[in-house]
Amino acid sequence: MKTQAPAQHQDPDKFIETQTRLSASPLVPEIQLHQASEDFPIWKMSEEELADYGIPSPFWAFAWAGGQAISRYLLDNAALVRGKHILDFGAGSGIIAIAALKAGAASAHAADIDPFAKSACYLNAKANNVELTATTDNLIGSPNKGWDIVLVGDMCYEQPLADQIEEWLRGLVAQGTDVLIGDPGRTYLPKSGMEKQATYRVQTSRALQDLDVGSTKVWKLLASR
Ligand SMILES: C[S@@+](CC[C@H](N)C(=O)[O-])C[C@H]1O[C@@H](n2cnc3c(N)ncnc32)[C@H](O)[C@@H]1O
Image (tube, rainbow, N blue to C red):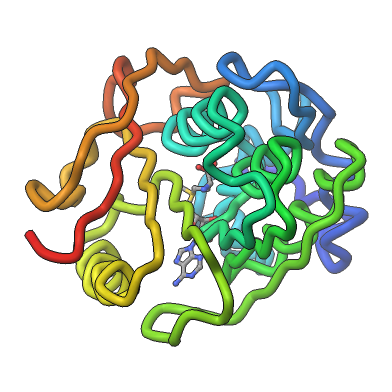
């Protein structure tokens, strides 16, 4: 039987506010996010059902293991981002951008091609009393637009995408930009040309990760493999 579509899906802000509740994720108790839970219809809807209603998979409705790990790392090592301009690439909920701002970043730009994610980033920033900017532009391949650090949480889940991102980001590193990647050991994570910065045990709020999430690492990307 088809799950009834949430009525407010034409308006991302309304959809998010009615289909989620503010809650923290296990590794980052400091940050409240609009997250899905068993109580709301999107939890029960399959990807196909969501697509029928024009709703992309709600990646923004959870704090993924990689995003939680980078956020924890920034909050515990605030000097890394203090006064810096950061890009949260593939932002989802915007947890990384919000953590960077809480750690003292001068600005945070959240990029996610899903318009629901863009709305979630703004709503989540507001819930945490920080201000970010957000875009749905696909930035892969674009030149550095003033970012000191690019932060990437859990983006290595599909091969063509992971390959494109790696090539783009290594190019940015070669030009002097720092890039940190948070990842729970996904198949398409680069196998070399990275330096491990930290390891965390991360639980996610849903069995949404297609792997058994145990240890999640923060990596510094190098210019070459
Ligand atoms: C697994 S989620 C991770 C979200 C967040 N970084 C975290 O760790 O919680 C991956 C996100 O990447 C976004 N995404 C996929 N392709 C993208 C692209 N080319 N540019 C920006 N975002 C993209 C998806 O919409 C999704 O929100």
